[in-house]
Image 1: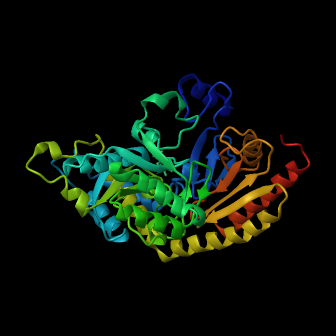
Image 2: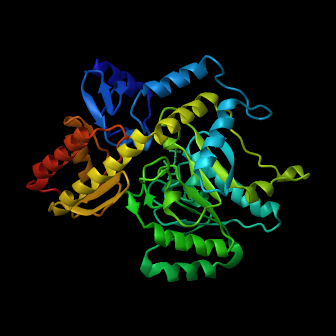
Image 3: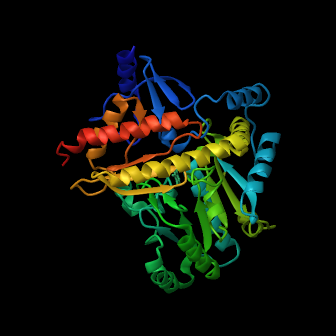
Length: 429
Ligand SMILES: *Cc1c(COP(=O)(O)O)cnc(C)c1O
């Protein structure tokens, strides 16, 4: 009963990033299988955005489900201070073996925002512990690192952060690096001298900003400069991690290594909430002391939850299988073929791709922004057609689970073209 669930939902639930006054009723989903989500009327939707970028191998993946279920019957949770368990040890071993070699220690938390909070605290306290207290942070304009206060502080100032403006700590925002501004960026950083504790950035793709992309070479050069200036680097791979950019991590495109890395979203294949912050031996060592004040006083009740660790282990196993790696390559190739078609379309602007992420902008006289109304029209039209494409303003994008077949992708592409043609002759603002 669609309506009954919607009525009950509206009576008690407050949805994320949703203006509840004007929002349509939420669609009740009763089942997920592979790339599809099913509503309570039996209608199915292709999840072309991986349910907010988390689902890697499709919904209700039987192997991940079985592994979680076995773990659930063995050990569901244990305090991670003073205790440990096989899934956490194994996951740390497996993950570190895939990361840049300088990543040596794993700190667990619950989501992307907390992974960022931990990273920031590691950096700031690192400078405190070594007796060179620094508190300023460098970040990219339009950055998004999460919704908790620290994560908000290092995110670009926007409508999302406005009510809290005075409570956010000081951050120096710089442009994303392109060939033309690299020297200028270096000068800006140079100018700030020794005050900067760390530089936090989304590598290659700024997701929530509207899938803004920059290339690996320029970022690598900026990182190299920060390295020389002894500015710690936090690479936020919450979105880009686990294959989205075509390689296992965005780090695999870069010639410089970060000091700290953050993961969540695809970490558990999108099945369980979990965040991870990894760091170098140098950072870890700065917290080793007989002085108890040098301890990292941070932890969450569900730190290294065994079910989430097991889900991550199972998901990473699937990710590393040859079939999945071939799927990722196939999606990339199919995307770039479709990108060429999109570029020819009169309503398209700034078609761009990094790995399995394809984004484009709808031409409109309104400014590109999160509140651009155009996207809503397209969102509704795609829903009608059984496809979930959730625009960021007038930026639309595809971030499909890797299990999506060629046929399903073609179905999505074809509908995109049909919807564009459908609106072509209508006046859109
Ligand atoms: C989504 C996201 C976060 C925040 O993760 P949550 O789990 O939503 O708190 C942080 N950084 C990046 C790059 C993200 O895309």
